[in-house]
Image (cartoon, rainbow, N blue to C red):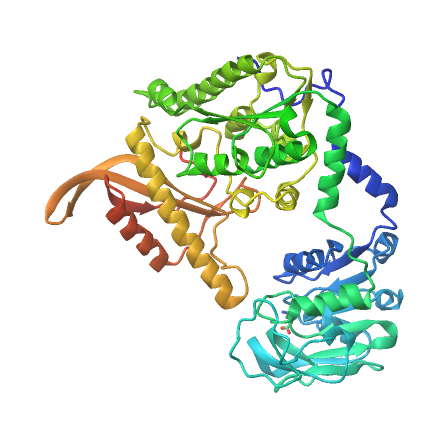
Length: 571
Ligand code: GLN
């Protein structure tokens, strides 16, 4: 078959709306309201940026190595210095030029950032006689704008963790994690809060808009942390708070409307994040001019087909033509007796094109073919190996030759995954779908070793659903209890069916059943990965539930293999 066609430049001059929006932003970059986070190696830096964005203020993170000139050029309305593992008084610890505090731009230092601010400006930081870790009661002194409406009995912060905790009027529960402390604030700074063991839990120099806090407002355990960050960003910095992912969505919708006019658009909807967000955007823009074909090949995760239909089908929230093709039997028929992984992939990919082609014929000529291609796909499509094979199917490579259309529309072509997710949330696509794990085009077909049968699909679907449910539940309760994500929370996790059967005993009877393998990896880029250290009791719970609830399984393995030498998927 011909090679993958991701984007036919000759056929299309479609300038993706995202690029356009960025270009516009480039021109207005200097005026765009933003807050900069300077990263000193703290654990929760992404959280800081996220909380700022939750205040509807655009926010980016930069290393502490970024030049002052560059920071100035960005013209931020405020600067936040993060926490970090070092001690600021040691010679080779990350630091910053003193001029940062003389720009006239409000600066908020958090933990290490607070200590560094005091250290640079002439205060004293040293090893604390008592380290503080965890939830600590902080007493607000005075009337800092940072703590406006913080620590009052009547105002219960949303998501308060210690609802029954008795606080007096000026106390609030904050999350601490420090060995050093500010023993003396810098000249011109006043103490704005303290704890039982920490005389300077916060300090401020109001004339210069400089604020230092020892605790972590970005962590949810700091009950009123979001309010404090809001006070800084919207109050002290005076940000208007006009930024929203909605603005991106609005602009893109406008662009699509202009480009498509009254043309017809066809999209192959896989139910994955990218094609779903593309469908949502297109539907917002052109409604029923969009037709989505969703092929259920019977190799989806449990209940996934119905979930996709509930969102995009009739009665769902989007206005579009939704066609679900239930091709399960057709696929199982084609796959019967096939055990070789590459052949399985090829069959699944080709069958997809055939089904899609049949549907396209029924629809007739369309003006545009839409694809949910995102920026990493564009980059990765040049790579060989496993990824190219998956992508060529996943992004319906090759379809252009079979379907009668004039141009390709790829509204997400310049977005990164997290931006695509944000756009999805802004469009009102359910979180469950927006935060879906990566899932290969050939689906469970390559998570079942050897021959694929309807019964094996049932086994792996049920085991996988149990596994994900237990991991999600445990991770959520860890996050609730500790205020931070579980360190073991995998980036990708699923069950696979080994082709191995072995002898077991259940209810005093001999069994001869399949072994399920559990896979869970920690990875940043999915190019390399390590197996995640899921606590043993969670794995044990999964094991016993899978064996008890899924007929045909009598053994459960945990896969410890890293990538390389293994792959994340099984075949
Ligand atoms: N390393 C510093 C301390 O121990 C700062 C810690 C932090 O930023 N969380 O006090």
